[in-house]
Length: 242
Length: 242
DNA sequence: GCGGATTTGTGCGTATGTATA
DNA sequence: CTATACATACGCACAAATCCG
Image (cartoon, rainbow over all chains, first blue to last red; front, top):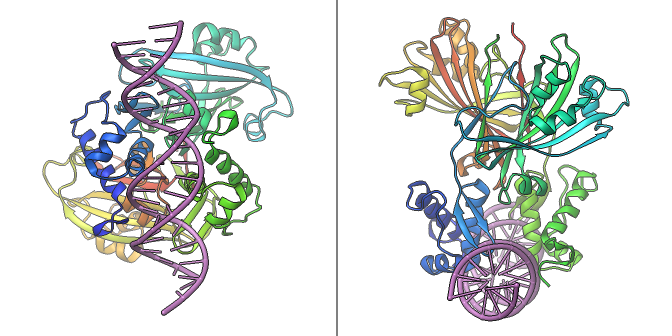
């Protein structure tokens, strides 16, 4: 058998058929796919072959497999995260009102990696590192790592723990305004840690945004590395100036 | 055996070790990995287990497997594509001088999909669609689909075929200037077609940019959908105004 | 709370197809 | 044409997480 007629592997054909079942709504969001055993029977193939098909869909973020439980259709509504000069590096994901929440995973005071130190124009001094996850309706939508110059923002960790917002914490530290001066966007597969923090399936894709914020005068203030699940979030670049 | 000590699957540990071999340069760019049979022997596992580890690295774009030939370390130098108000939607990838070339895959005059028609504010009229691939040093770095309002840009296809640049073709059509008014960036796994056009391995990640260009007055002019191989290209957002 | 049944995850061995050198 | 090397597929077995009576 192998490589069936028409040159397409069996698992690709199965993935296509399952994809249509999902995208056409025959299996609703949150609904469960048939078990691997059932699918193997339905398509008259080995369970391994079904697993490869399902793995492909899981990698796209279309479905999520849970050991012991089943494989479920993932929500695939797109959130839009706006990126502009005045958009805070961390603040709320736009649209879809929903309950937005920030959760601080941890903080540390340490020497940042060389590229971060360079961006912040630090010379050997330590920086405050914040690790945070943002959720919308309980769903993780971003995983951020932020570095701040300690000299410019004392007690910021304490404020953040209370407010969950870097911007308001900065305000409490006497910094009223800052602007985003550069943003670099890439994408890759999520690491094991990111899979856990963002509750993703293996093979999931993350958008990676590296941004530098500075005071209106130009002095670098904070550097942020944010990962977004690509099947949930898209980034909207705001080209207007104001 | 299965699920080895320490809770990590064997194939993950093998992928980690191979990744280090590659990133530390023990296997240079362009170099060939040991065959699956050799790796299976080295790690004392079945060939299938090795294959899963290698597949994970291929999905990241770190290596490329070629049937009948071997598995090779992919180049992973990053190109930077700048996105700003005045950056052309199609023009050259920055940095790395190299020989940049555009290749026109085809053109068509047809009704654009609804979202494109809406962005261009067309009402039922057809648009010119351009399909193009851009290469740097022979390597595909972007795959673009562009729609233009026919009324505003006659003969553009003919000009593009000669020059390989949309901007200069527009100039030849009497349009001297346009600006990018919005850009939306997402990421996902490449489709089968994109894998072929961009010469990628299955599982590769593409950055997807959807951009709208307009005349200085504000009339929509062209809409572009560009896919970049995420392991080769990152997007740099230019927040300055000028 | 316990224990068995269910369901996905990992791994081995084997066989064969397909593309390349 | 032949050997090599990756690709697909089957069958078996067991582990780990979850579910349910």
